[in-house]
Image (cartoon, rainbow, N blue to C red; front, top):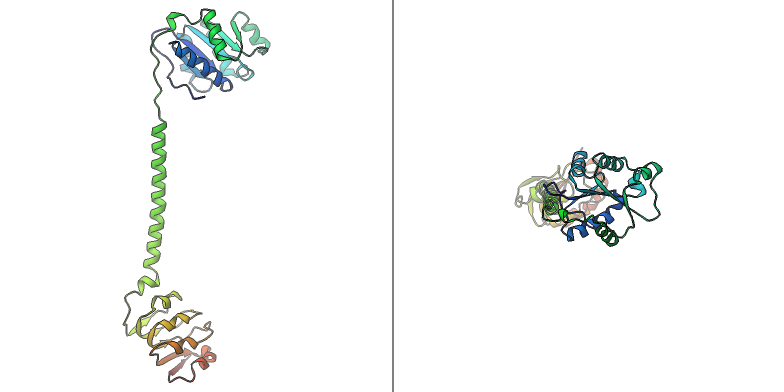
Length: 287
């Protein structure tokens, strides 16, 4: 059941005031829709929906008031107060409740002289109201105003919000990826082909991959902290300074470098120098 789509009636003509508890909202809306089909002006209110001033105005200005009673409704102080206010203003009141349901003794006594319809079938209730002359001609006519439908506006705002969030997230990752790229060896070393001297000691192992296919005069890898130098075989280099890299497990890959004539190692790497023996290569040892 959809919510009541009309604003409470505040016009100068007579109307019916209907008040329900949340638990009875479905039945209340069924009744209100049938009244509307009969051109009856309706002020429909659910407990906890309207502010007290609006509820009081609805009761004060209505021609007739209908309250739907249930255990939850009778236990609700706001509903009880609205019934008491209708009594105070001497309104023509009609109560609807399930057959067999009895309100608390105090409220039952208070409603002893109020017309009661005992059913929860909306069509039966409307027929009974007609039989009792409740739906008089003075209640009929135009005047109900649609509530402003904010659902599309809310949906648009939600979509806009999601779009903005996705834009921010996407921008963040694009910027992060861009920053990562411009600070990567691939970007920083892309224009060094043909250099007479290149110091990559501040890079990690990716620097060797970035130099693939390039020609370098002297490649300084001193203290680079590298472990795997296998990618150096793809670099055309004349001299390699690989000192102070004790975690390098073999220098054998240096023998595969085209044009390599000179290698500098440190004393802590002497045990790997044997990997270079047999080639016409100058080996320099530093502390």
